Length: 101
Image (cartoon, rainbow, N blue to C red; front, side, top):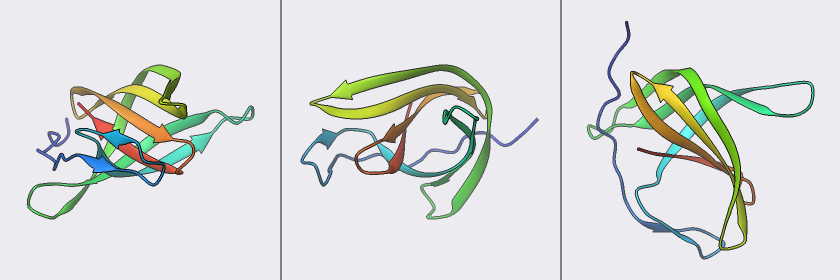
């Protein structure tokens, strides 16, 4: 019922705020917003090992958590994508998305 989530590049990087994230893969995310302003991720795009960019629909959002790591706020969405459970993370200060298995 859909393509499997391909292996994506994982790496360690230092963000502009100086925070170190491991296994955080950049992702482009298409979201809907509810009337109260809550984000609802619908589609993600990631760069796979072969340098190709692949789109995946977000099948189901299992949980949304508002978290803080070293004082930096992020939203952690636990989602089913292509039959796998992954964490889709929005870094509020940096306005960027990342994905972790």
